[in-house]
Image 1 (tube, rainbow, N blue to C red):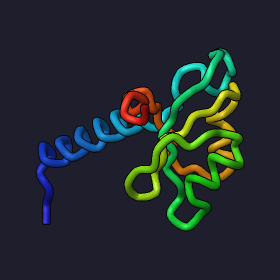
Image 2: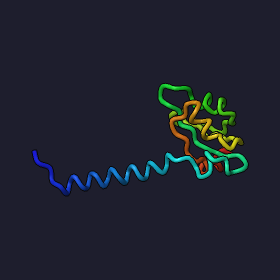
Image 3: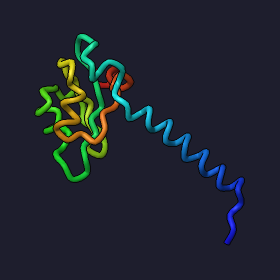
Image 4: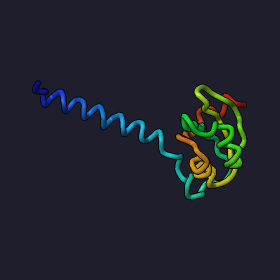
Length: 106
């Protein structure tokens, strides 16, 4: 079965766009690993499927839980400049910027 080169290029384009969009979402917020930002940071913590839960990860990273979410994800807050690095070190699968949900937790 021979595939059309146009169809192959369309799939490749879709794959590249998906990687670009989701890759940007997976990056920690600017300045998080360098410790350049002062003050507390709100993040969404998503745990690994067979690892520790988000509450344990946040507690080990010396953060505070603000709100629980679906699929074990939690909104957390930490004062340490390396808070995001600590979350990954203690088993977080993904750490997303929680600015969007910060108002919902108030």
